[in-house]
Length: 349
Image (tube, rainbow, N blue to C red; front, side, top):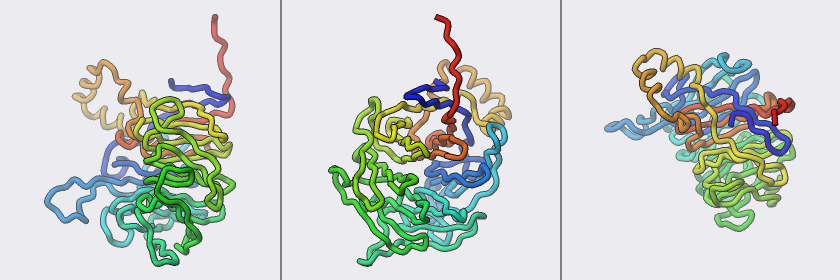
């Protein structure tokens, strides 16, 4: 269903972006998307470690941040630049997990393996990194999701530590909350995180198959979803985003869909993926290979290709009222519009 109408909201599929590749216009294992100014997006590629017979810190393929301009819609997308690479040196990543921008358009990237946050300027020049030293001397444990609040503080999901930690942008510790478990307020291998305009945090509680909403000081306010494959249920959620109206978008990773909830936790609808047409860059590659065109015409049911496949990340662009989904296994981004106005045509009875 390209256009969905549910609970007074309209979600309309727009187009998809990208193709598989280890540089330039290609994506390789999308793990994060950050919205920049003037129609730009920053795409975090986790990359792969599949080159044999070389030292471990030189095997990454496609690990980087790609910067793109989306223009005003389909056909206007353009690759701008990329930065970062695989490794354990300054400005390098091993297992990059999430990406966020601050008010000055500095780029923050968490690294689950290096237990660090790396910071770049808006042009991709490396500035510094830190590991979040706390008063007891401990450091970050498997940082995954990151988000920056309106007050310019960074919230970091510690997936291996089963907690949320809050720091200044320079890495000065503020507070932390959470411990491993399944009771409300407890976490099990959490991953993605989002912050709303009131500094409430939403955490993808990965192995508990739910999203928890916390207040500014870590008190539990609400729980979204439960384990399963049905309406409003989740299996291994990996990311979460929230729009200016308070609607919550959850990357339901193992169910290969996006689940949408109202601010009070009511299930609204699911987005399954609707990429009936190839992206502009995939179409260019296909058009250059007649054999590929021929084989694609022989496919009896192409619907599987349209759908999401283990999406890892989702972000809502409040300026353009768009949902951007990192369709990770298909190395593309699917984009939906949330329409404020929609005139439904009359149906003949």
